Image 1 (cartoon, rainbow, N blue to C red):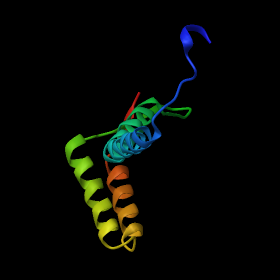
Image 2: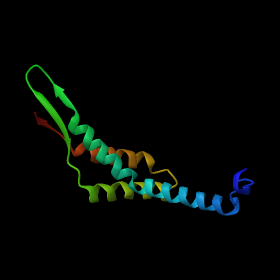
Image 3: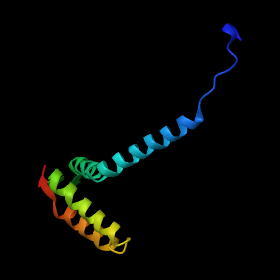
Length: 108
């Protein structure tokens, strides 16, 4: 090999723990931001959806309150975690009810 290079080696005793730490941080960040990202995507697609009839055209919307919606969903997730998943059906219904309650129709 050129320049007397005999190979490329990595010290796996340092790279594997670093990789695991970085993946854990990434997972935590996605887990924290995930509910708000989902709500923002829902708002985007709701605004792009149009219901058309022969008489009129209706558009959907979502009245997002980022802080309160985020905290509400996190509270439901925390209750589910504390109860070891027993609260999950109620959390699902509560979050769905809140999202559907803040979804509205408007004339286009």
